[in-house]
Length: 447
Image 1 (cartoon, rainbow, N blue to C red):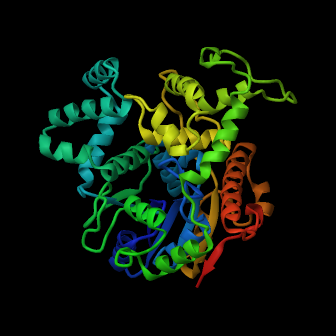
Image 2 (cartoon, rainbow, N blue to C red):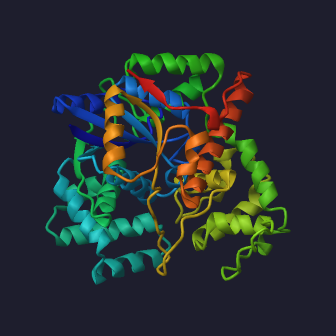
């Protein structure tokens, strides 16, 4: 059995995703596909359009064999954290041979060379990084320039480098390779050549469209008009049902909950000048209730960037109740929009920051368990192999299987349950249709 992993969101599942799955299935007679998929919140810092079970069903009907949830702590991290969480789970399954991802550049050696440079920063790289950051540029921009100079020194032409560094899909692929290298994983990358619409395209190209374009059209027009050629029939049916019953979600649905949470967290601060952080302060003793200051400190960690962002947020949050408008008001030159919206979601869900090392870099560890969202008959067979060959706890029913997890793993699962319950309540508010609480929901078997 040739097992291919995909780290995905399917928000929503479209023709480009379908083509990727078809190509993998056609590449080998015994091909199996494992998807590590975000749950009810996605990496751009939003709630997902469709719930994770509907997206799981669409993936399984269109070629996936096993769908596992990527914990939201990793989803709402940087691209580096998102990639590390997904790759670590695929690696610990033991049975996964290769990783497929959409890309503009399909030469694996380019990703491997760039990964080696980033994982082993030499003095020239660090000097460029420091100089660029000192000018007030964002870390992603500074890293991009340092990597470009390093790749030029490796003999790669400038045009290829610019194209590679400015493709969001290629850059996510680079983060996958970095995670593979840092974990010493045997998984090989298999970049899948994207054709048609690009990541940022706001138009239809050859029966394909970007996920952002599809979501924008649906949410603005409240219709699938003009999208039927870019979505599989199964997706169209599920989305139309969501439109009819008002169960599709967007960032607007997070506005009121976020503002309420901000009011609670900022309740002990009189003004932005009061928003100081004692990084040496001990955590509350066991049994002692955490204050809003304690909670806020745990959410942002010791990131100076996020501390400054929170100070700006305190000044304006009551004047801009809309989620997206508030993000625009607090953005700055050195902070990306998606970084802000991910922080908003972490505040909303009160999720802790990943710890940092002595160089103020995030430290990631594997989630260490599999929360199964759905599988086919072949996926069931694959799960049997994973049980035999790996030591990962497998969660099929959160209500009963949670006992298999250690305390840190249980925190991650509980965070996902809370995130899904919030999304469930938002859908119920809009539709008036009751839904089963997350802890009582189970996997989706597809023959």
